[in-house]
Length: 378
Image (cartoon, rainbow, N blue to C red; front, side, top):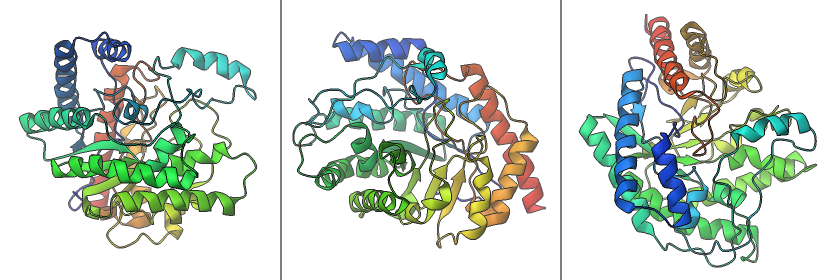
């Protein structure tokens, strides 16, 4: 994995806006009425375009934007056995507490809301779909001459958070069954030359699933999630992996988010070399100070979000630079890669940030990193 050895390098969290024809193809795939040739063509063109746009914006470590997937987690139901149970509704935005906000956010709902429970043993049934994703992205990277690229994949804990256990004797058994299955995808991504990004929002977002839980008990839950993740990736070198932790990409108030300081030590026990997390939004923008008191383990790096993924404001490059410098002063410039709070296209068909503005924001990220580099290396 590249480090910021001569300048601050840039990346993002994974998902990027999908063009309308790709969303149409994904919807057709869900109904079983898809023209496979047209699907592959649309996604391949979208992948190539999104790679070119990232590079044009000045992003150093790029990906396929998750163009061929409906979202970062639930696509696994089409690739794995065991998910035939009754669908549970998506996690809400505080409908009971904030009914006006809930009504406002209906316009941002994704058409892909099916989240079936686990009702049988989990195993691969369509690994070829994962291989196709990898091959398509790899072809685009090679064609574009990209130096380093990554691909996202959900952690066992994240899958368990979205797709509830109705089959295994315990949540722990379910979690480790997922780890045993998903390790094949993680390894395939790395074997293809990618950095694998393990998406682990469960480590922060699961707090909302246990109202009134004590901090000590919650820490036990996420410690087990990290243990399962480490079991799944035990044969992959740390420097071929990064992970993303977050509190969600919703426009809600986030007033119930668990503070970073209460979970950061457990997060850092995960094997991946780098950890990505939000650092720009109004609820967590102050938490750069946490890193002044945290001893970053040897070899680890951080990928703080220095632009917000839910706002249509285009951050000024000087503000981006200020944020980067704060983190660099806390953990060392070589240990910082500048990133984004969360994904811009977390769910296909859900648009919170204007697509044109997404690319403007990523351009501002790159310019802010250049300004920060001038301060940090001169």
